[in-house]
Image (cartoon, rainbow, N blue to C red):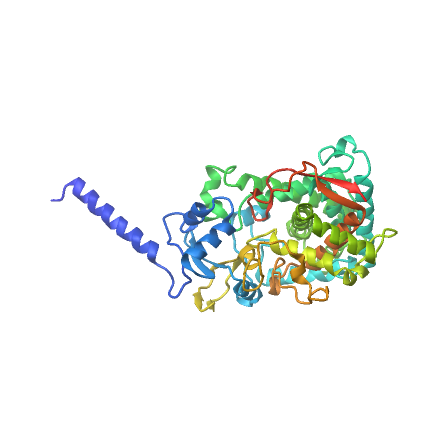
Length: 502
């Protein structure tokens, strides 16, 4: 009869064999990549390579496996990362990869089934995306619109006055003294007001709404683009909710939803079907036509999905714009010289000027290329068995486009680590028609706000650089090596800059 020690030894051997086989088990013809270890699968290897910046971890692992398409496991979930420009663009464009990943963070955000636009899929997503885009366009979103341009012009004039005035007590958190500002925080109020003018026809006090931008940023910082440990092992929310981001995702999102529900309640009290003021009125009207009960949560989350990318996505991108032009004063001078030549100083730039400002447009493209604000995009889900890059991709595989490496693909971009706006200009200084960047995604999941974002960034930045030279408040270059991890990238250190009137 076997003794207890011998039996325990045999069980340990069998368990070790099981773990070994489990680690090596992969779908047939699955892309190369690290093994699957207990509990977190290949996530252990990502953390080992670069604990904070997982897009860099994936880049490192891809080099080790000598591949442009990496296969790994987030817990038991098969996951594929595209790293080359070609494969990333293909994955983003194909219908097989339009699904979203249902996670504990997605569900806590919507208090149940996935809702909104960003994190839903299937017919539910298609219906609400189509409806929202069709009606938001009536208020200037995603198209040329005098109404939208006037909204932005009002905010540009506010910012120009803000930069030349002594700060009030309420503004001290984003403005130490006249012209000394915290980026992108000083833009938050304007960015929220511009988009909310179309969603809710509401204008807010700038310093009061900054807290909503910060809550939106905190939500995007509550995890990483993979979903992180809390997604792989949801039970962690009971043991360490603060450390793994669950608390922030819950509280910050509840704060944002509450903000939007107050606006919806006000619309319901003052609603008239004879005169629609904005998108929320259109949504309420559609519910009345269908005779259905208003889904507060869905309306609030749809509105938030269009609102919070403005201060978070656009805001952080513009902070990179400021930082790169501070670090490359020669580029800033060229931008300003072009503005002086084409627009002058007697009026603000308009969208009619875009075609005549190729160097500015090239500079904006280069900012989007070099520092993509969402380096891994938003996770997608493969909705059917298929192939990509010659490899088999099973249904429900998590798909991650590594925009960071796609934008640094030497087969597409010469000297990819260099900030060089001229790469988007031809020999005659004209803007190259084809924009190779994929910062806004591609295919049916292309960012619904791309046109809005590009127009807003153009109008804000041309207005500011037409009138100011931007320099570092410390006299030192802006540090791009210290970034806060999350779904979006942002500066780790507070970035104060000085706006000097021209």
